[in-house]
Amino acid sequence: MTQPSVKVGPDLAMPLLGFGTWQLPGQEAYEPVRVALDTGYRHLDTATMYRNEAQVGRALRDSGVPREEVFVTTKLPAERTGRERETISASLRALGVDQLDLWLVHWPPNGSARPETWREFVAAKRDGLTRAIGVSNYSIAQIDELIDATGEAPVVNQIPYSPALHDQKLLAEHRERGVVVEGYSPFRRSDLRDPVFAEVARAHGVRPTQVILRWHIQHEIVVIPKSKTPDRIRENFDVFGFTLTDEEMARIDAV
Ligand SMILES: NC(=O)c1ccc[n+]([C@@H]2O[C@H](COP(=O)([O-])OP(=O)(O)OC[C@H]3O[C@@H](n4cnc5c(N)ncnc54)[C@H](OP(=O)(O)O)[C@@H]3O)[C@@H](O)[C@H]2O)c1
Image 1 (cartoon, rainbow, N blue to C red):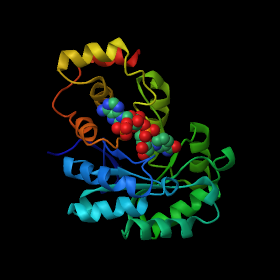
Image 2: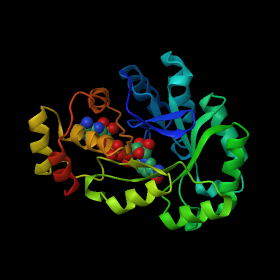
Image 3: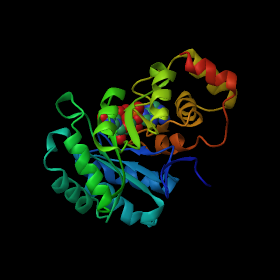
């Protein structure tokens, strides 16, 4: 199956559905990541702060899935600004890879854009340590500050997203700047008992959680659900066999 993806570089495709690994510290990450890769996920989201890069990397190697088939993201904790190169080197070592696919500034350092850090990101990409660079939890104004300072836009902004947080204007502002929106916490930011999800799910014979993931994908918003539960990991990947109608999309937009 070719998975739907979005272009984040001349030769780089980011699968719209990825596997989140927050709150799977250390060894707790290993089995879920193995299950995710066996299921077919080809995009893993970790961070220095999650303290599981080594286990994510080991699961990736043990899975037998070729490295180049998996999109790997990790993130610089904002308090490591000033130590960017040291931190990406530690991430590469822990993950056991030569190059990241995407490196993100995890959140704005001290609440500001910090172009100095972004310059280090541009340099890390230039030096081949990562194929793409982006940010997380940045505002549009902060993204503009980085673009003004360096001429280089983040390819991704990873932000909280869900139907309840849906904001067409914010999506358009990212797209105008060529920034892909990657949503996090799709379930934690949703009322899973909302009747709209239940009705749409019933119409397709799927679960409300699957409707939420499918909605992101049809909006071309990257989505990275996390689960430690094998059946849920598999269920969350099983979202390519149905399509929401325009009317269903509009109903969910309004939740
Ligand atoms: N950049 C940032 O600042 C930031 C912040 C937050 C998250 N993230 C990233 O985004 C990923 C996802 O966000 P998240 O972990 O906050 O939350 P999430 O994926 O919205 O929700 C995870 C929770 O939902 C449960 N769950 C998963 N699948 C389910 C299903 N099919 N049915 C019912 N419950 C289900 C999980 O339970 P079990 O695990 O017990 O199955 C877990 O409690 C993170 O793992 C991380 O990679 C980034």
